[in-house]
Length: 44
Image (tube, rainbow, N blue to C red; front, side, top):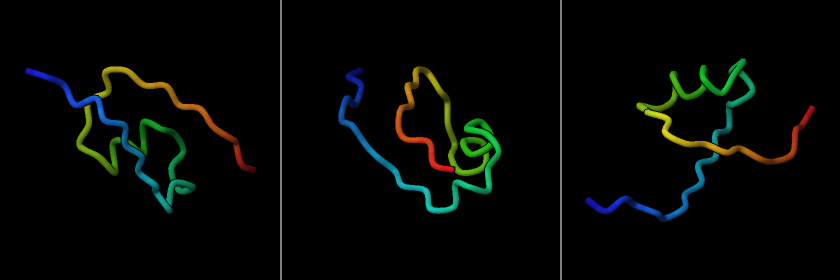
């Protein structure tokens, strides 16, 4: 089976209400994390 290697981006407008990435993933997605790297600008 060939894995999908296409990059995707999902914008979540209400991310501020979650206290952690784990909480966001558990509440927004049916997910299994196999490998993740998150980079970006921290906004206060």
